[in-house]
Amino acid sequence: MNGLTTSGSMPSLVFIHDPVAGVSMALNAKDKTGSRSTFTPGGRGQGGPGARGQEGRGPRPAGAQQADQAARPRRTPGNDPNLKVESLGTRNFDGVIAEGRRTTMTIPAGRMGNELPIQVVTEAWDSSELQATLYQKHTDPRNGETVTRYANISRSEPSRTLFDAPSDFKVTESARRQRPVGPGQNQ
Image 1 (cartoon, one colour):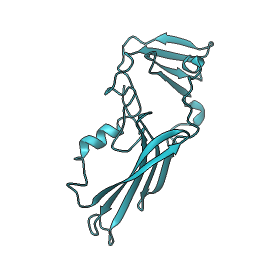
Image 2: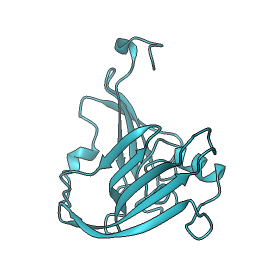
Image 3: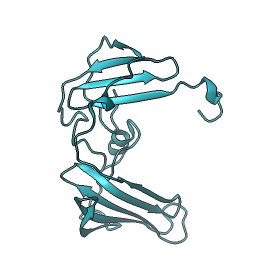
Image 4: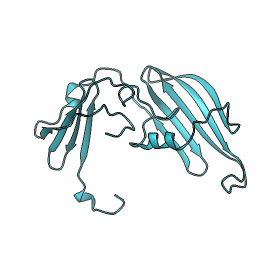
């Protein structure tokens, strides 16, 4: 909260989302309470499995993807001479094959008070099998470089206990039924 409160007074929250069972929980670790809500599993297009952000991007803060998409028209190499997209072929990430592409956006000199052109480059590797961006490197001379990647990918069945609240927590059923929530989706 950027200094607005001491760290001791902030609740420690844990969110559990089970897309197979159609259950989401919000747990407060400090007072060992929580709420549980259900949804219909597999709701593609509602943030369920396969929900994705902007072209070539993985999870982002809730609402950021929708705001970005609504605020600006979609650019494509065909209608924007300052946008270039190139295929990088395929690459193996911990046994998962991903297709790569590099998108280079050039901000012409003078457009933002810049004396020289600025190149913003995003390299993204997407797995159609996992329906996720496994690696993304975003380089912008104005903000630096950001790398997001999946590591130690395991496709084995997770332990059922990962989706349960600890036995000493008091979890109440939420009164409202919710839509499926995925990365970058609001409830």
